Image: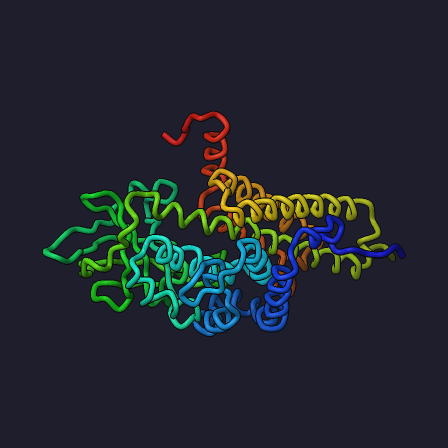
Length: 390
């Protein structure tokens, strides 16, 4: 038998990753292997997840808001954050979503756009997992067009009063604080909303076929009264929430590859053990062609992700470059998951193996933080200088 290699070994990508970043990646990988993978199929089947337990564990490892500086955050490189997302999503997209929404949406919004008082109040507790955050931008009728949102914040004396509904909000029903974006008389503004505030509710969304090991909720705001100090002072217009989305999209560039890698490694192991006509399924040319093609796409996606990580660490990463990564890597990851399912045959539809669970999750990842079509148009605008959104 020839020497075997893992898919990414063939690309030698470890040589492109610094020692400290590799150490962080390996720590997250061990946590996932020991603590998450043995339990995640049951979470998916029962559509439950111990979000608070996981948040505390992830916080103790320094993974929440890990790429942010100060306020109890670890201050790692962007590349380390991406690699952590990859390992988390190798377990399940729901786990990576918990970390992404906490760190790249809720915490980043406070860190980038909040007042010093808001940062001091929330960020240290969110970094440890003591407090969980969510991010309310998407509405039932406004996903790709957030500028059309109907949630409204109006002045009432020195207070703000919020009314509206947000939809598909990860962490929503377990959150201690929600970052809610609303129309005002002075453009879109962000608000820090403690979820204990009267008039705020977050009913959980049930009967999902994707991201079942994740908390997804609707946010309902009915005359939610907040002091003036609840508004994020530095964010005005859609640039505020869109900057947060760009942070989350960056994590997905790496995260989707984790799901794809887990599927591919599962398929390689399965085809090596499964015997068809008296020899391993892995010994057939069509099987090897599929494995080779999937490895090629996984490796190319990894090289792209690492390049974007270098650009982000250098402070030069542009939104359209993140769109390149999100569009390509999620599209290829879901194709890999589906192809791996074919190699596992009927076994591929069970939760004994991760491939269809990953494929179902990636259906959501393909849509959230910008659909493929949105990212195509962002890339098209960068190439032509012409916006095709309207």
